[in-house]
Image 1: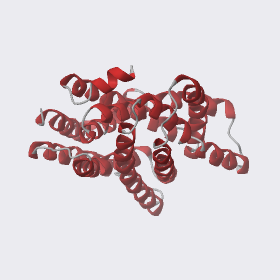
Image 2: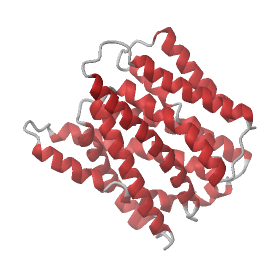
Image 3: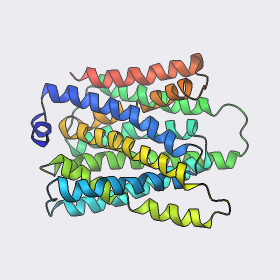
Image 4: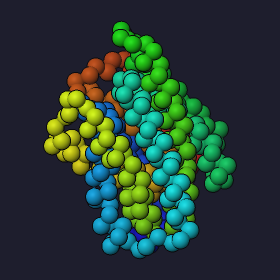
Length: 301
């Protein structure tokens, strides 16, 4: 499997598979965000997800994939720091503002930065039309977030704080996307990198969540929380693992942009599952986001 993935790098077939992986990752990430922001405290939800990531990943990392090369350990250390900061800002944002406001801000802040950094770090080139597509996608996502702000707001200061943390999280999303893409390319076996990545970056939030749960005067029942965590961990493999494999075999910027269509899928999930109204304006913005992703994907072919 690893040899097949590595053999796809730079090929037309690899580009097609990378696009499919990025889109699959987008759908999974929309579900992942909803799972963390659901009825449970976002700190506890993320802690439960990470606990199951440790449980699921440990036997894979220790017994099923080759041992990491020595030069990978500093890369893993960097990933631990970046992803802890990302998870911290994500939880801070979810704690302060609604999901429909926070999620588009996070996803809309990252693409332009990621594409620009990837152009420098990986010497990736993009056409003027592709840059236009990135602009359409980012504008559509951020406009969707602004549209979701309409209506009465009980605590405007709390909402502003949530948006601040969401912007910070978006910047960190661009940072970890670029760093992870570089990191997975340093490993001869991409699945070795993925297994150890999921294991090592998941130890922090279970400790934070456990300490937070113990201090709560009205502690939530652990059974439903742990069930949500197990499901979230499986979704995380598809969401984060899928996009990392996509960046291994094709352009980092294109994979990152396609993944941000998760905003469209999040809105569709809200409409189909939660009964939320879409409306013509939100539908138009979703179409703009999708059009931007399509332009980025096909304008460079």
